[in-house]
Figure 1 (cartoon, rainbow, N blue to C red):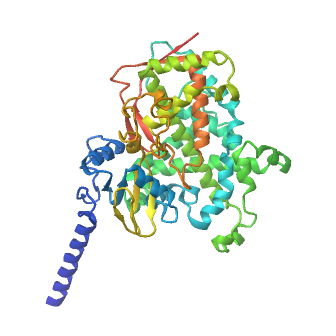
Figure 2: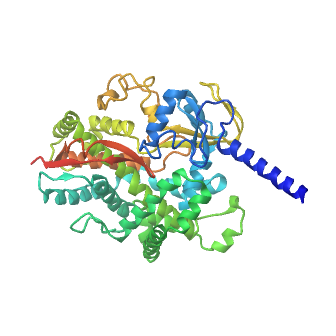
Figure 3: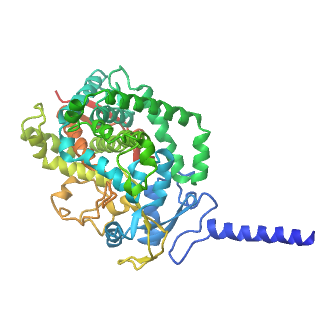
Length: 503
């Protein structure tokens, strides 16, 4: 009996030691704060309970600990790397640094068979079909479609009282971008802008509920996230609604004849995806990954879901930041309008040639993406032990490396003009030849955002059309203070603007 008690006591002591070393101790020599159990550094950084955003928390830690430090995102230990030469090293040595296991684990809970979660041979198989969907020529073919959707939004705004302060700008941007993406990706009318208000329809509400879960997943261990989603009826209902709509889109596409599919593959993502469907899923499933061809129906579904979420969040977030920043910087807004006026007038149709001539607007788009990057970070996993060239930091196999995009964008060593200023002219002046890794709004390298050409093009088109027609003014500090919160993208927390028509 005494032996059993001693054995149990020994096991308890060993478990306590393990927990202390795993959750309450720093690992190695890199600086940082000792983490709290389960919460990591989130309480100490103010992310929990003090409403400090993750980008600002990482910026504060950088000021305290330097370019390389440990940070515990919940129960996950990450190495934050902010020195630009170290960042370039990580993002250009793909044989050492692969897709981050941390981000893969998080996304795989939502869409396990999408390209963002794939590695190795499976990634190559998906990339063969997915990357071609976002080629610039395919994206630019949708210029008129984008403008038509903006015009629908303008009709709604014109019906409003001029003194109304719009506090749901982010939601309106999401609906606008999602409506556009429904046609670009699926040749499908999601009927988002057809109603009389901005309450959305069943699908848009389901998408809101679906992506809302991501904020919880970002800070939670995988097993807790899985339990949370399993018992979250709102999330499960949202997922079923989205799947039903996506299956309906797939079935509608399968009814098209081969000639129609061939013609529509030039502009429509879903037509290309459907032609990638495996003819015999059971046979393909039995093959080694290196020998598989095509995509299964579940893989196509997850890719479509990823497209929807990305289309719902990233470009919409950037557009909302654009509107917020225009309301705060009337000088910039006036210069955009002047450039539009000198390139064919403010009421003329926007063509590809006119769009290419808007150099200052390019600078504004770049500055919006620098000042308020929609993505939080790039994440990589160390495949073999390595030493970073700038800091000399030793990294070990299995370490998770996080590159905070906001830190690079606000690093005074990388920008000649004060990076805390919103100043688009920097890209025509002293910062014209900035370090290429100082501005990474969509990451870079072989695992960069596959939709960045679409996002940049769409943001420029939407911004140009809005500036042709309306002026945004500040709704006041109580409603238009900005700030961020993180979901799939880093979103503005408080936007409140007035909208007036220019003619």
